[in-house]
Image (cartoon, rainbow, N blue to C red; front, side, top):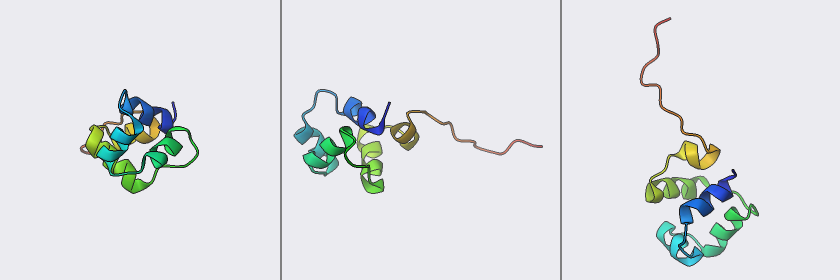
Length: 74
């Protein structure tokens, strides 16, 4: 699954206008990302993770990574 496909999944049944307004972005920009005509900026990626409550790992890679809280003893 691509970033565009994950973004489309997050948008769900909302229109491009509704979704982009929540993100403070232009609908054309969201459409271009969903259709893989342009990339995702860092600022927009962070805003998406905040608004949609998903991890940056999932948005960018499709995988959830659990943080390593402490390094194991050798």
